[in-house]
Length: 131
Image (cartoon, rainbow, N blue to C red; front, side, top):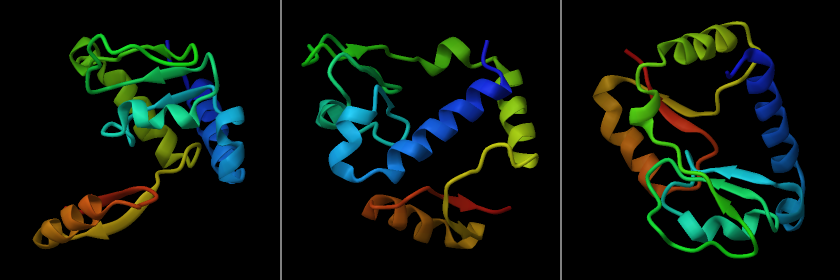
């Protein structure tokens, strides 16, 4: 079961990896979840160390991995009703135990601007539409 300590460790590990020079990422990263890299798929393997884990969230198929990288797909439909996980995340964010990576805040009227920013790529975080 995922708990606050696990989420905090994941956040801290990602921050440590991203703080390193890019050339050190393959050696430092054992895992790469594709919430932000969903469209990269096997192109992201260069950032995963040999024998590491790639966790696709948008399906994978039977494509072989390289360098001993293990593929561990996650399917939203299998955890769709685990609303306590969302509640836990909400509580942790409210308590500043983890931080959201927000690339920009947009009013609903500017949703198209948010989508354009996302499509342009290169964002560190996600555009957020405030209602």
